[in-house]
Image (cartoon, rainbow, N blue to C red):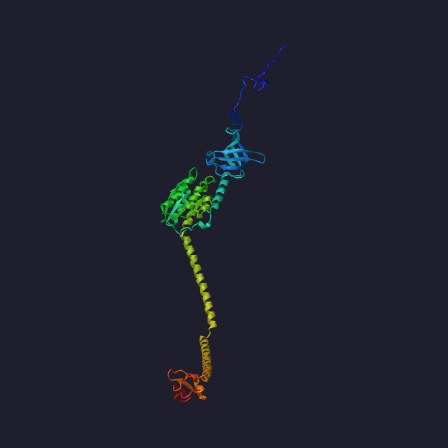
Length: 412
């Protein structure tokens, strides 16, 4: 009975003499090639988490939905083309390919392009930069300066080929042909435009001869105006020593430059009108101010007349008031004299009483009552005791009237 031949595939893995092995690197490369052939270009929707911008400029993050997640990477060259900054929690659409990072065998989404879901990339970038600069205080009214009145030299940073420049020059020539204009031509859209505009602003500051500066361009799409939404332009305006007027696009267009500038003009033409008001407008303003001044003076004069009339009514007869005051002065003078005399009388009475009391205490009053005072002649001391005298000692006796010299004959 013939046996069925044994197939190589039926043998155990390690029984075949010609068995084949795959290294891990070979397996990862095989998986990588298979994935890249199958998923080489696709759009993936998800939410960013664990976002990290590496020093190399590469973006590493996780893209997830409510059920799963996948590691993703966007290299520096592709990330530099983004108008906005990826952030955690941002819902995005990513275009790229699925592959394996063979060093670790990690499945990754390699992102070549990214768009935010629900809004355009430019709109998101605009809001992100607006919030950042506002937090730094670049939009604060306190740091903005007043524009000079009728400046002598006007700097303009714009394209030398656009209609906006011609409109501004026409306004300036028509209103004040003697004013000097310094033009710094720049690119206003496309690659390198933002850098060129920032350099133009810095250059007009360096020359030191410009009193005010207009930075702007004519209308266009959001993409056309985007150079004026770049951070480098915003910071150049904020650093300007010369007051800056932003005049970008049409009245409905708002850019980051508008928020940072010292003044926003809705159009370039309006910027020129803002810098140099028409003479007719100034004359009309002066006329209005003159009329207001006359009205104010008339009002003040009327108020003063009413005040004087009120005072006149209160002082109908100034002489009568003077006579009343004179009479009152006479009355006060008589009363003062009476009070003064009464006071003198009181002082005299008090003096007499004091003199009487002093007189009663005087030794002379005692002598009047028959007493005498004896002094020792040798030292003029009053003799208070007979024992202090010596027989034969001379003394002087003072009476109420007169004195006598005596000699002591005997002591008791």
